[in-house]
Amino acid sequence: MALTRGIQGNRSSTAAKPIKMESALPIGLVLLANAEPKQYYFDSPKKALEYFKSESSFFKKEKSTGGNWEKYLNLWEDRFPTTVPVLISMAKIGEGKTKEAVEKDQKSNVLTAITAMKNFTAEFGIQPDVTAVADYPRDINVLKSLDVINQFYKSRSWYDIDTEKGSDAAKFKDEVDSERISMVNSALGTFNTVTKSNEWYDAGVVMAFHRAYTDSKKEFAWFDSISNLSINMDSVKYPVSYHDGLDETDGYADKQIWTFIKDGGIRPWGSDYTCSNNPIWRNGSRVRLVDLAIKAIRKELRDSIDKDLSELTVVKKSLSAFKNGLIGQGVLLGGEIELDLEKTTPVEITAGNFYFIFDFQDTPKARKIVVRMNYTDEYSAVAYKILQEA
Image (cartoon, rainbow, N blue to C red; front, side, top):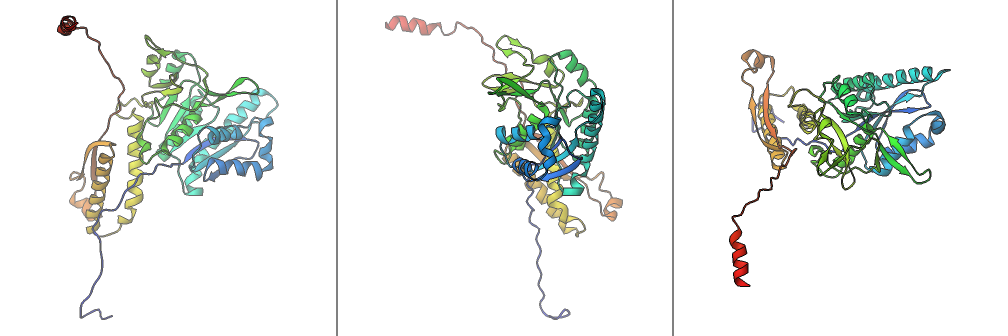
């Protein structure tokens, strides 16, 4: 084709690019097994169970050696069936000549496995949305190590503090300030019909399963709170009274600690609190909204990097369309996309750096509903009418 004469044609697009937030998001777990530490990725909990039961003979000793991988993966598959990616950092069970030595060795292995969760993206190209560590409640070292992972991935955890004393729960909460951790007060159980007893599960792991199960129900379920949403478990280790005239949950709520109440089943009761001391970011739904929005924006607009100026109009149109979609779905009350003129200076433009501001207000969730019953005699005429017509 001639390049210096005649009619030339090419194509371009200034249409907005679709930005979509994902719902079926990966869960990252630290579990125990009679095996060397290693990270794994599976398409679903079912695939994880199939692999561990058939491919690795040393895992088959789990029940007699203190591992917990089978216990939790079975619970996930049985009580919260869903197909989401599973990332597992397996910790080796402790070894030693005394109980204390075994516990010390095992905790060290668990802390190492938590740190190794940073390898998920390098090994599998996938990062977790919710993380959990099984069977290490009320351990500040475990909790802070998990929070480091959450800050790294912009993920979230529920953490089981497993205590029936509100004072102990409050004291533990005072050591933590994180928008990526939510505390729950009690383990949850399933009833074993053979032994006629409850089998207890770490509530942090159960809540991760509950979150994944809820997310799988509809496209925008990731913005729904799982507080006050019935959870498929049979019992609460440390129940908190909640009924007309008596509410023992307030003391926990004042410290931003979730509890479990029995009301038409077992319900997490926590107003979606995180442990953040910042009142804006103690709202877990808002934190997750921002995290998932940023991830979606990065993913869908990545191709706009190193393009000419016309691509910036596409970026702004795409962000505006994304914002309008969230408003249309009831996630946001409103919002605005603007170029940040304070940061986008001539020097920054020369360097190719452009800054946008995404102002938003998310749709609030009711935390308190008050109904006042007020007696009045202004309807007495109705009684007169009834008697007159009798």
